[in-house]
Amino acid sequence: MSLPDARNSAGSVRVAARLALLAALALASACTVRPLYSDGPASAGVEAGTATQLASINIKPVNTRYGQEVRNHLIFMFNGGAGQQAAAPYTMDLAVAALTESSLLAEVTSKDDEPTAGAVTLTGTYVITDKTGKRIAAGKRNVSASFDRPRQEFARMRAERDAENRAARELAELLRLAIAQDMSKG
Image (cartoon, rainbow, N blue to C red; front, side, top):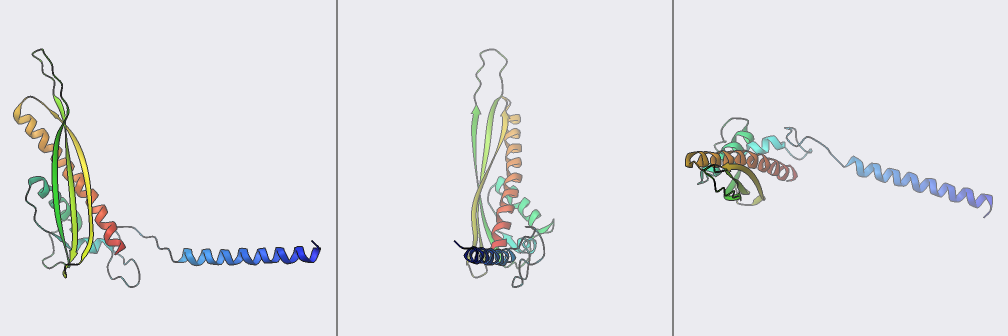
């Protein structure tokens, strides 16, 4: 290779590198990063941020105590402590199922019985639709909470209920995050 050929190949490499840099800059300029719960619009064509979209979701009533706990927490988090809107553009069907299991069965032959351990697993399934019935988002999340099962009946029932309440709060937070992600995409 002669000296003029080497200069031409080095020049073409420089041109290719500059073109690659320009292409990378063009791709990077299309990326937008913003906080998930911001109130500002995601882009020029979108009129509301994720926080406003979350406040525009009405959650239909549920029929279980732990489901009501999840629903109440979601309504509080979606609306910042206020109630639901009278005529919201989105409706959410929420289903919450509970499963209570024994994690440990300790059998003691003496008169001192040891408490056993249990776990409550709450599974929340949601479907969000708009006024026309078009499905906007759907998902499923689950959370577990452990508790001790003492021999006393009331103490056992109260420990199980407290575990359900803890799991309901955690499930509501997970659902809020999942729904916020779904709404920010759409």
